Image (cartoon, rainbow, N blue to C red):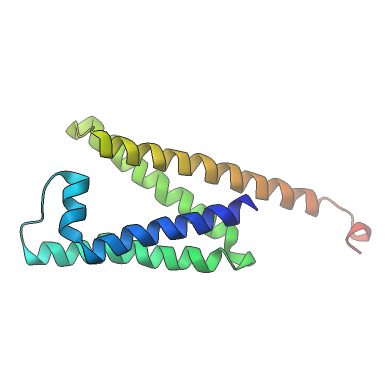
Length: 140
């Protein structure tokens, strides 16, 4: 099923991003922004925010990818998180003029993720509606 596949892929990607920030926050910050954090507290906050939050989200997505009752809610969570990230990048590009290769690649991957998750959620909704339109006799 497309939704489960996308949940599992996103779980891996968010986990890799989180692990990279927990282990190498300065290098990751430089790769993404072109600058290094200037204080130890900045590094600690980056480990927590850009490392810990994605790791927690990845754990949720990994669990949801194997828990049928949670699949759709997790799909919506991925869609909204990726849409929020894309929105923030677009605002940054327009307000700050921060367009570069890394920002462009991240924005395109987020928009692709939104499109794929939208298709997957639409598909599961169509399947669910088809199943609920059957008469009680057809379910037996």
